[in-house]
Image 1 (spheres, one colour):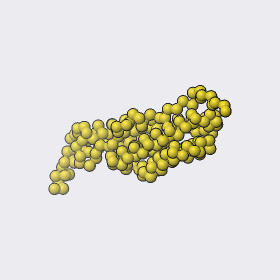
Image 2: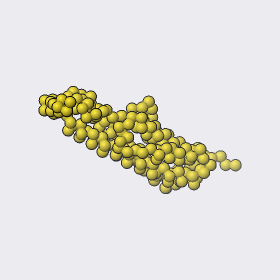
Image 3: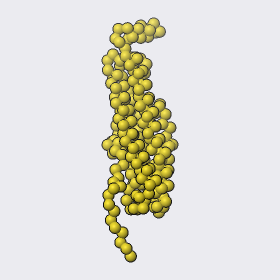
Image 4: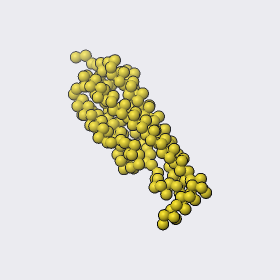
Length: 203
């Protein structure tokens, strides 16, 4: 049995250009791209408490919105986003869904600012909002790079002759950002803070 396996491996490595090194290289690329995705998501999560506190200072009675953001951040933090997560499709989808909920919660929080001109004029709030916009853009870039890296890896895993090597070593395709609401999740919150506000009626 051992001799047959050895012969098979010998044939794979010497007769078909097995693609083992390409598979390993692509896997490392995915790991690095995934680390950047996590880095940007963490950056966003770190901004949220400060953003909530600033909004709370002007709109403490918006309890449902504030609580929604806090809960969404807690769900994101509860997921162990390790490099191994990209090998578990169910865990990966759970992570993507949690990040989608976070995006929606942040969008609702930012919309609250439209009701409060004083909040919109607050320098700290404007700075946090600018940082958040920049982070959302970085998330989009990092996700796109990860998507491309996974695509290249999955092509290798499925293509001949590297698919034979993948089969021998138990290498499988990796999950990607492909969910039903992908387009909605991929879009950063769009809030126009430059729009004029309606004048408040004087009593």
